[in-house]
Length: 309
Image 1 (cartoon, rainbow, N blue to C red):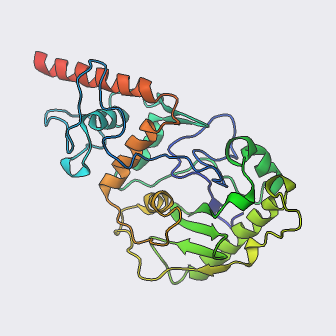
Image 2: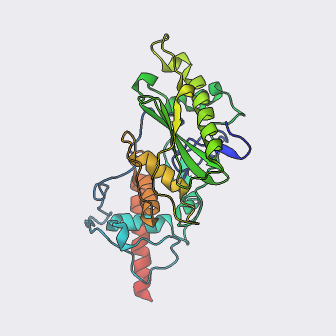
Image 3: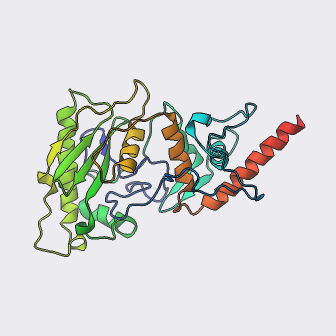
């Protein structure tokens, strides 16, 4: 779907990948018709009781100062609970197997791929959903079972992340207002028209997909999202210089702006940490309970070794 090195990815952040295919996306689909609740908005909602039965709900918890070999250390300002801090230490440990599976949902996620959430690292994706290499029918075949089970009449917005040379921006296809909303944390005057054209291209591709009778009860209704008007909201905050945060901005827009048009969000290291922790603790992760138990065992083991020193 993209020109040159432009790629359109259907994953939220791509902290997961699968070895079975090289052309489908990772954690969410090109059409998130059934949005998954990937984030725990209440920081005390997720399980906060370790295997030993002791409750840990202290907010603003941190690792002991002697704890080392953590690639991304949680801080008090991140407002994590004790259990979330244990999860963070387990995810970003430098001493544990980088190939260990931390997420199993529709796809798999490994400790090594979570490293892209370490501050100042680029969010990377290994697989793309839209490309001129694949026809709309092929994409439908790959995504139908997991992500495309409702009719287009139930859809208000489709989120399409686009990556150009490691820079991410977001196209929101809004069926209610008939707009293509382009959100870019690092806007460029030189690339504005190119990104506008790319938004129209992916909308045209999406239109071809939605022309399939699978998605439309009313065969007389015309899906014409390629004619939607592209807009770029003005006055939005931008990412910090050299932060490589564009992928995190895109993920947060998808997380926080499902329906509202308030795109005025703030991104910092806490956003990256919360994203990593939430992806492991989300209810669709088949390994959620196992990882929580492993995280507490790991923390207990490290603390016991420290006491022996």
